[in-house]
Amino acid sequence: MTRSRIESAPFLGEYMQFRRSGIDFWTDVGSRGSVVPVRFGAQEFSVVTDPVIAEHILLSEVKSYPRDRRLMRLNRGPGPELMFNTDNWDEWKWRRRLLTPAFRRQSIAGFAETMVDHAIRAAGELPGSVVLQEAMRTMTMRMILQTMFSVTADDEVESLKESFEKSSDVVAGRASAPVPVPYWVPTRANAELHKLTKYRWRVLSEIVEGRIASNEPAGDLLDMLIAEHLEEDGRSLGPMDLVGEMSGIVFAGHETTAETQTWLLYLLSRHPEIEDRVRAEIESVVGDRRITVDDLDRMPITHNVILETMRLYPAVYLTIRESDETFTVNDVEIPAGTRLVINIRGLHVDPRAWVDPMHFDPDRFTGSDHRHRFQYIPFLDGPKKCLGDHFAMMEMRLTIPTLLQRLRFDYAGERPPRPTSGFTMSIDNGMPMRVQRV
Ligand code: HEM
Image 1 (cartoon, helix red, strand yellow):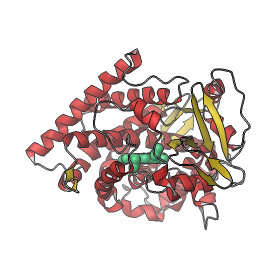
Image 2 (image 1 turned 180 degrees about the vertical axis):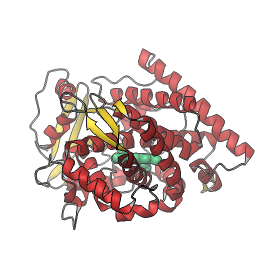
Image 3 (image 1 turned 180 degrees about the horizontal axis):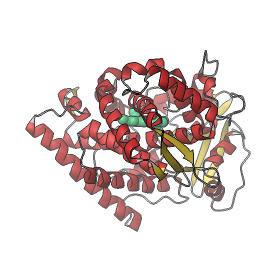
Image 4 (image 1 turned 90 degrees about the horizontal axis):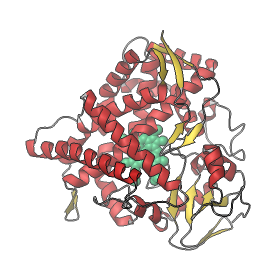
């Protein structure tokens, strides 16, 4: 492994530098070698910024690299083992296989109307001076709660949103802390987390149990899951499993799409020549009418703008695995028990693979791609690839044109926004924008 360490302190290791530099810390580490050791106090990691090694971990030997066990143990509460928090391959596979059909492209196409409805509602609420990140989070939370559980009441959406977002903050803080405190230690943050989790479980289990009891379909994802019976190998997903899995899916699918769309609208406001091309595409394909899923394949510029935004600002900028065996790959030895950070952002801006990597250029995604498959992995790749990638892409490809048909966005911050490391890649100033009707 490359041994060059970054600025390091005796107890905290590289933690203070990470706190100061945020996301840039990972880019910097990536520029120092393909596998670089990093220490945050008592936590030691090896940061992987090499597509060949990433492929080995995430695809070729995926079974030998479970999710990081220490993190799983730190965060696992009293509920069932879930697709999200299990380090057991068979358990993960069983759960994933049962949930996958509901997330196929054909299954989710029926949610397009709901997504467009919420984008239109957001466009009506936005004009003025806004913190765009917050507005996008409200919009994506409304979309996901309605498509998954048919939750539409504003006060219920708001309190669930608060519960999900505050919980994410606690979990993210714990993952990078120099001395992480497990969920069962009675700290103030953990007490808050328990309260939020309890509330969420109560609301969501009432919905799930009520639906199963009433047997009345509501046309949402929950219906699809119940209709599939979710049974295999003599086991089935019960109501509490459903609450846990669907809760995890809301976590995974809310801030990620909100943050990506916020960065995208910022990038367009800074690159008027590209914004003009996106607007021209919307005008020629959709005009003034409502966008539909049938329009999407005729909108390559919008599609490439989304891909390029996720290259520069991948909402999930890293993921952590643990090696169960010792391997040598690409001349690097990875001993058993190593905690590995897959440096997604680092791979996306590595100058060895990308020309002028920090420049926003959606045309990189035009034509054939000669890069290694694992050089660009915003949704990850391999068996544990994002379950909601089609949902997310459909949501963003419908929402962005719907907003741009109605609005113009001008960045109103005094200095450029900075990406910060939370549960997802966040924004230090929330992205202040002046929004006007067009
Ligand atoms: C721009 C939006 C999104 C991005 C960039 C993104 C990215 C990712 C990534 C990188 C992972 C792998 C995480 C890991 O293993 O550590 C993941 C997992 C996952 N994502 Fe997404 N995601 C997005 C939106 C969504 C949406 C909208 C949903 C659901 C509707 C969703 C559901 C999931 C689920 C359930 C997993 C866990 C899969 C598993 O453990 O097998 N994601 N996502």
